[in-house]
Amino acid sequence: MSDKRNCSVFTTIFLFTLIALFLTGLASAETVIGFSPAQLSVQENEEFTLAITIETDTNVSGAELELSYDPSLVNIASITEGDFFKQGGMNTIFSRGNIDNELGTVSGIYSVIMGDDMLLAPGNFATITLSSKGVAGITYIEMKNVIITNSTGASLPVTINNAKVIIGDVETSTANEETTQSQQSGQNTIIPLVFAIMCLYFVKRK
Image 1 (spheres, one colour):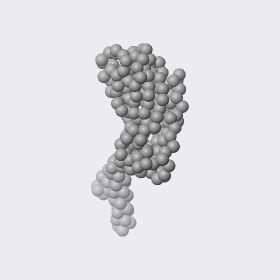
Image 2 (image 1 turned 180 degrees about the vertical axis):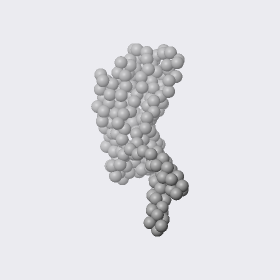
Image 3 (image 1 turned 90 degrees about the vertical axis):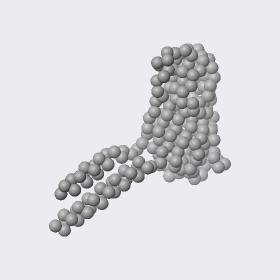
Image 4 (image 1 turned 120 degrees about the horizontal axis):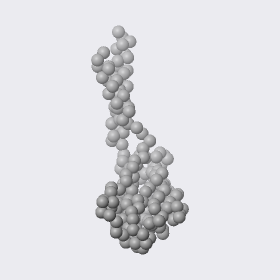
């Protein structure tokens, strides 16, 4: 009888621990990286800019990412550092990356604070200068392999909001498609919750 009671107590503690971990995961910090504006209409052969913005409620120390786009519709002329990681007068190391307008990719974009991580206000990570070509169409400017870290090197879960650029005259139904969004996270919190609820149900039935 004592063994059963001890087992029940242990199981209950275990279940509450799982639930607490799940709730902690729900309340964990959120980091969002996206473009401003998220959708832009331009004419053929026009130069324009997009800002990459970051908003987070936890300390961060650096970010890196890659870009992809349709090179038949746009070219990237330059990428310059924003002020997001320079808040508080911090020094940074910044790389604009390797721009390849033939493939429509940019690799190796990053910025790192030279010091401890900080809780930063929403801001501009980088500004991209692009130019449209003489062809009407729609291209998504997408971020890939996004990594945002704190000073321990831990990668934070991040929501990515990509941009859509409408060039020239295109059909309205096509232009109204939603911009793409994706999430990167190394944690799955749904499975532990389901397991905890099932175990709690069977413990109460005994």
